[in-house]
Length: 164
Image (cartoon, helix red, strand yellow):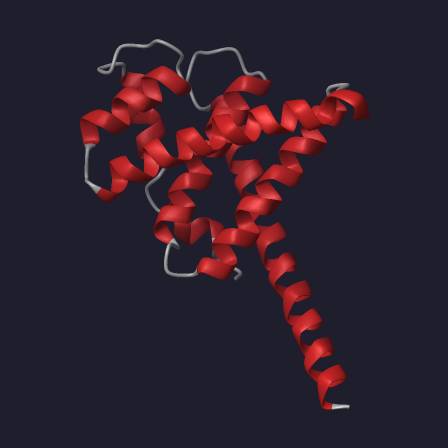
């Protein structure tokens, strides 16, 4: 009986964590949709922009929550569930979804690692360069839109985690 009660407790805890993570993910999606559509970035609001913003802000949340490994892992998984759903909505079929998700995972992981390294080493110039290259696709590192994106980070973890 002890085994089953432990198993049920772990399953309940995992379900609660997933619900918390989904809430954070949903708030992040709302925040990013507002930024991409109304944030003054002056770039085409499309899948690529939203993907790159999601990776950037997810990386920042992971950086801020780096001590909470369980939550961070669950959050990164949910981000990719959302990306997969987005690809399916865009018409990617079952035959192609595996290859597209593999490419998305590689792209996102590489970008996430660059952002995390910049935050961990307080490399503001490297962070600006990565934003210019990935999000604003070739913009100059002095582009004011980078400041808009960085300003959107202020208070971001607190907003995302407010009901955790």
